[in-house]
Image (tube, rainbow, N blue to C red; front, side, top):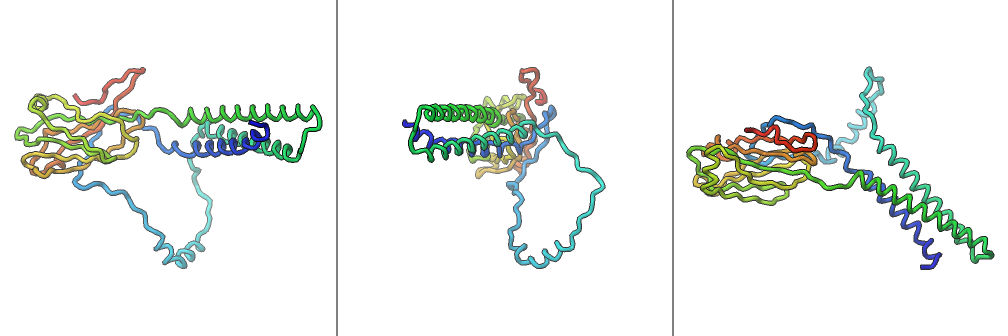
Length: 289
């Protein structure tokens, strides 16, 4: 590629790099660390899917605009009596500003070099050719610095997400009529488990049956439980709300020993706990015996 074409595309390349740095530095830090818990936490199985809070529209504000403005005029600023608690900033956030300033400075340097090149119609001497070579070396150094900054951002914001959920079942009532159980995850994927005679016998003798084990998103989720049997030919549904911890294995246990045929899925006893990690080894501490 000719030298002029190379210089013409450099500002666009650096501008795209700066835009990537801004996008990568914005999200992904809203999640708070979840403290490990060794004891199971009781969760409710609800009949109706929980609804998220919906915010009012701006119709009320528009209809009451004059009243709200009048009330805002009465506001007065007063000094507070207590100081707000402040936490230490993550050193990486301070480093991101320096990275952005360095990137912008690099763009300015490249633009200045491009303006000088456009004003020069021809090279009058070997000295000017040497100056052009120096400018190309400067561009190469700036691109290397950009790669270093992007590598630092990639190390902070990318990785393999390993948030897992394991759903297990235990217990079986004396008059068990359940034939199958359907788990519907937040993404709509159904998991149908049909109990065999061997599995029924294992649950009756105190065994534990794994219903599901896979990767899920580390956010609040609602899992639908549907029981199918002679008492519920059309299926009886309930819902369980869970909050999986990021990069951890969360257990959801369903206890069928307290299943009441007349109440259906809402009579199930459910509990959750995290798989503990100690000294690089995983241990099921907190799991019920």
